[in-house]
Length: 374
Image (tube, rainbow, N blue to C red):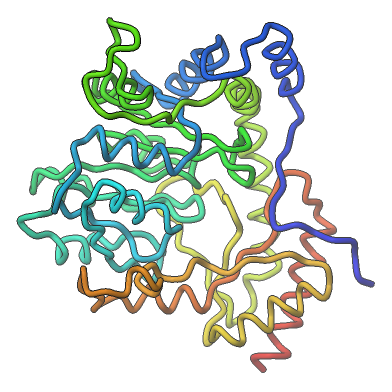
């Protein structure tokens, strides 16, 4: 029997979201000034055990703000994984710098430390490890490389709020770390982002650049070109309420991960992302299907759609995008990103997805695999 539509993701509002938003509206604090911004920033910093959290209007902005505050510009090179959401590389270009696309590990699908070493040149200024699908990258190895070579580490934690590696939360390894609160993320503010850091100077720089470059002591005086990257009080109200539920939200995703894996693990063609560290937060349950081509992947996704199951492909490699085609970087040695991209499918993952739904999705997927890859 075909079930009703099962979305790939949807937000969960089970706490104080409505209460806080109504309070912001009733008090008139709906724009980029208001008490919930400071409360959200403080709670987010405390959750990570860092000194500073700087809220932004979305996650892409957080990455750009971090790079700008770190002084990335001109012909600087920044190492980014070839397999990630396009914003990671685009933000480097926003700074007129060069994203150096680097291969990922075939096991954990994250930035390969060995490949990072191969990509470093005299122009390299920073490394952006991405914790893909909520799975921590090999942060200690990357951090060691950065310390040996004098590079900045900016963590892209857009998909990994709450993930942990070697006893520490992701986001606490880089000089700056960036998060996204888009509607499908671990917590959401609709759109929204955050930068965190322990560096007082970088924090102050980000706060200035976020607010048009306005002098912090002389209102409406601008010493430099900045951006309007501020979060609204309405966004922050939702974010604070969401963060209050973080333990429950993560536990729910843990349950979904175990339920999917228990059904799918016996199949010989299914490959799981190897987990680094203590906690993969299962932002989106994603598998590889050995031997899958792009066309076969699309057939399997179409079959699931016909059964009212929404899925999504793993990201295409950034080097395949038309505006990354010119030879402004070396595209050699990016084989793992290609393989994972064509073999990968993400399944519905959100709080409220029931065990019966998971069984239906998994069994429909297994039947489709056996049909198209006998």
